[in-house]
Length: 241
Image (tube, rainbow, N blue to C red; front, side, top):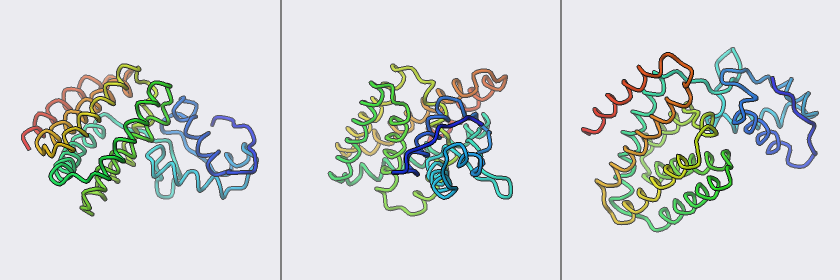
């Protein structure tokens, strides 16, 4: 467990959340490591309540996962899980993009545009937490804009498992900018009402993101080649839909 300094009394929950998030991004809290409320509260010099609230927010954002009767752990993935998650995301978000482009909503487009600008600024400043938060909010808003309750529910389930935040700090600046360009292309397609281009842009973006994830998150794993091969086959199949 990483050691933390004591905090100021104002805004405790947010301070704890920010510190834990940065520790995960920096690798000080390793994938699979357990977060113990009492230990963290003791290190920060606070009660358990703001720690519990901070951990709940981190769970919603995909940084940590709760396991019944075991506790809370930093998100940890297998290559097979990544393939499953990204292939389903391609289907769900491709459908979401189709809906968004079929009847473009100016207010939604403007909110999405503001998030891409945040991603762009965060990439330029090497602010990985800021980048991943804006990216998460972009995809949440894309799905939420469909008002398709089951699509929204399924996409949220996948995102809490994805742990993109755990790997984003290993991206290079050119790779982050490539992801930003994908989002601009998607916005252009949605605003133009081009359903096919919006769907295919999202699927291509998720394919690239999945490939990056496998190569970077599992860099030292013997399963990388198999995972990449499987991911490619899955996305060729998904491309038919």
